[in-house]
Amino acid sequence: MHITLSYRLYTSHSIYTELAYAGYIAELARRLHPNILHAHFAYPEGWASYVALRSLGSEIPFLVTLHGYDILIEPRIGYGIRLKRHHDSIARKVLNEAAAIIVASRAVYEETKRLISDHVEKLHLIPMA
Image (cartoon, rainbow, N blue to C red; front, side, top):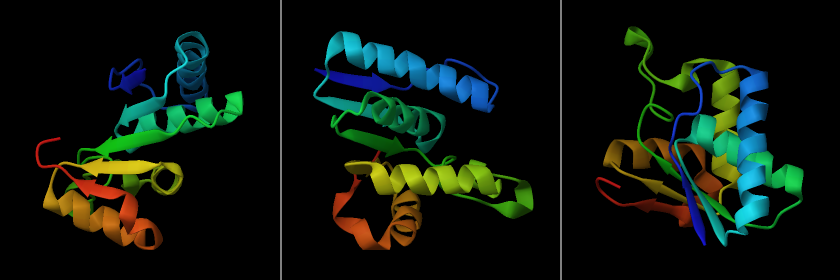
């Protein structure tokens, strides 16, 4: 079974909502016994998936699909969650822990490749993924 996470459960990004989202994912994983967990966006879905699987002590691999806002930054216009240091470190942790990373554009591919230079083999460009 494959669980895909892309639904925005909440809009506030606080430690409490992150943990609540991770708890929800952990409960789904306990009930459904998936073979893989697929998160859309490094944050919050990727982070919540990572926290959930760690809390379960699970070896279920998770993959993340990146769409742009979670990886790309443009400081002049305030674009990208990684402009906040906290979110940047979370995104980097998710990228390092994911079994595979799918990106939908060349720009996202190049930035992700720069961030995970030691693990490029798990990075896959699938246009319009």
